[in-house]
Amino acid sequence: MTGEKNQFSIAAELYKQAEDRGIRLYSPQDLSLESDEARCLFRGMQNRILDLEKQNEELLQALSALEEGHSHYYELYDGAPVGYCAISGDGVVVEANLTAASMLGMAEGMLINVSFARLVLPADRDIFTHYHKFLEQSDAPQSCELRLRRTNGDVFW
Image (cartoon, rainbow, N blue to C red; front, top):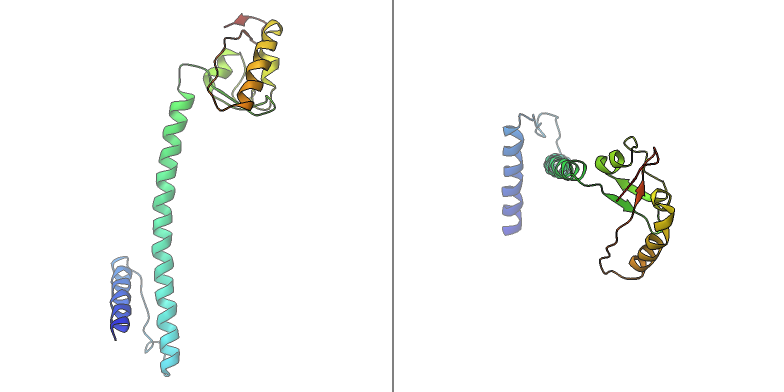
């Protein structure tokens, strides 16, 4: 009996939430459902609809929070006063912020899929190769200074 009462309480709460949202729910009598089995199936479907609507609302709230987090990350990353590049294991730029592109004299997005070694001054490529390989072999943070070449040929640290 306790299980039935609990199910009734849950169903009553779901119906109340539906009414609060302005959702019109039909009763089995509205649809002339005569058998107990038909009424039970009908109520089950209505409860499932209410559950799905509640889940949808929760998903929309989660999506909103994710979009807010993404916006915050984007502002921090692209608005940074230093250039950032994410480089794949094979040395290709997979992500770069606006500052990095600007420093190299490139348009936004033009750094993606470019070999980072190509941006390094030829005299410093061995340094980059050494540190990149070492970084791939260990999880320890690495640091080195490299000279990079802008698209117009100017060199900068």
